[in-house]
Structures are given as structure tokens and as C-alpha cells.
Length: 343
Image (cartoon, rainbow, N blue to C red; front, side, top):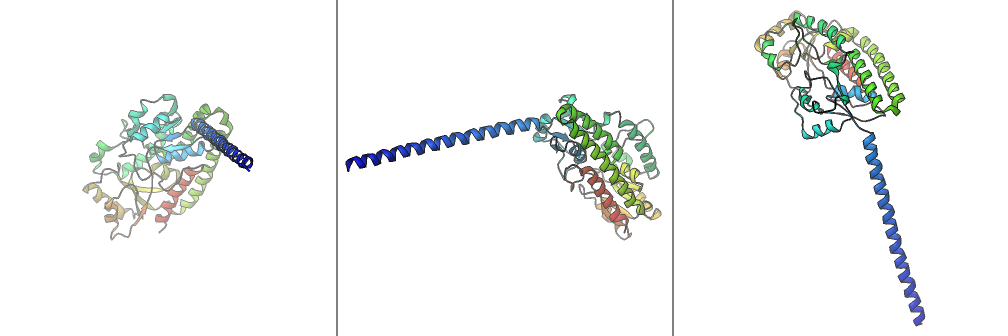
């Protein structure tokens, strides 16, 4: 009986030791798996370096070309405006860790100028300095500003200190809202594709396919938008600030004027008086506000006039970054125009 008790005790103790060893081995296996996952995750992050765009519309272009290659991130968050944005410490870290940075230049993205100066030039794409973009800026700007000159604003001098447009000796100024130009966006996409290919040579074919898809989708969507807006091309309208010239030129819309050059500066009494006259004279159909600002002046001007109020979003807050988000952004703008002008 004593022998049986000792044998049973021996078996129980050995089973306990075996179980403890099993648990220890299992824990070691789990630990190895966790460490391996961490290493692989770290390696993936190193390879999957981000393309960072200064503003969301540029992010639309970047995400189209970088789709399946690397992630795209933006600096100015949804709901904010580049006109009054200030960098946060997290933004600075984002810039330093970016593999490529896409911005327009100091005339628009002035909040980035200091930080970009400390970065490696090889990973920065400055749209304002691209040779392929320069001739398109000249043509679009000249046509756009001639049109605006016909509808001058008496309080323009009050906005000079805040105006981010660059004036040349002729008095014309560069319109840096280049993301509304399909042709300029194609040039930006091509430059981005070239830089991405240098960074990710193994993804050369995918990047080339993304660029072809971007251009093809953009051409198809542009044809659709032209047909969509053809019925309202002769209807006059006012926009909140002077940002839509490239879009209007590309799709044949007739902008009567704008309330302000810089959205941070409200139009003065003389400007408002001129606008009221033009609303009546040109039979303006719509006044367009923007979600980033709450201009009470638009509401007051529309009262008792029969003029409709619409909304345009130059930042594309409702559009998600994705492979075809730039074409979707232009479509969203066209829909916003059409909804108000068709009334």
C-alpha cells in the first residue's frame, strides 16, 4: 500500500513538472512569435514609408499614384484651412519621418516653409518649382485674372497684407489653387510617380499602372463633368474666395466674381455695394459659401434677392483618400455647382 502511495505521488509530481515545462515551452513559443511579429511590423513600417501631402487635395493625387505602394498622409487636417494653419509637434514629426513630401510652395503653404528648409531636398516635391507646371500657371493665371479684373473689388487694398498670391510686374497674380486644374494635376502626378519609382524601384510597374489609371480616370471624369455642367455654363455666380479659376476654365463655367481674395479677410462696404449691383446686373444665380468658414455676408446678400446659396469645398473634407479620390473630388465640386446653378 505504501508502495502504491509513493508511486502515485511520483507520477503526480512528474506530471506536474511536465505540465510546468509544457507551460514554460508554450510561453517561450508565444514570446518568440510576439518578437517575430514586432520585427516584421517594424520592417514593414520601414518599407511602407509615407508620402505626406501638405493639404488634402494634394493627398488625393498622391494616394492615387501611391496606391498599393505606400501610405498617404496629410498635414492640414479635415475641417482646417491652410490659410491660418499652424504646425503642431506631431506634424513636425510626420514631416521628418516622411519618405516624400508634396507641397505647393511658400506662397500657399507658408506654414511649412521653415520645417521643409530643414529636410533633405531629395524627398521634397515643390510644385511651384516644377518646369512642367510653370507654363500652365502662366496661361491659366492670365486668363483667370483678366476675367477677375472686369469685376474688380474696391477693398482689394485692405487684403494686400494677407494675400498669398504672387504679383508680377503686369499686376497679374499667380493662382496657386492648382489642385483644381486637371492638367496641372497630371504634371504633379507624373513627378510623384517618378520620385516614387526612385524610392521603390521594385514597384516600378505598379506605379506606372497607377499613373496610367489616374490619367485615364481623370480624362473620363472630365468628359463627364463637361457634359454635366454644359446646361448651366451661362449662369453667373459668386464664390466666397478666389480659388476656383482653374476648375471654371477647364469646364466652361461663368464666374461673375468673388467676395474676397483671402478668406480670412471679410469684404468691406464698398465691395459689398459693388457685389449687390453685379448680382442684379448680371442676374447672378448662386452665391457659394465654404464649409471652412461661416461668412454671414453671403446670407445677408441672398435675402430678398431670389439668389440661391450653395456650398463649395476647396479642401474636399467629405472625400476619403483613395485610388480615385482626385477624380471623385472634381466630381463632388461639379455636383455642388450643378445642384445650385440648376435651380
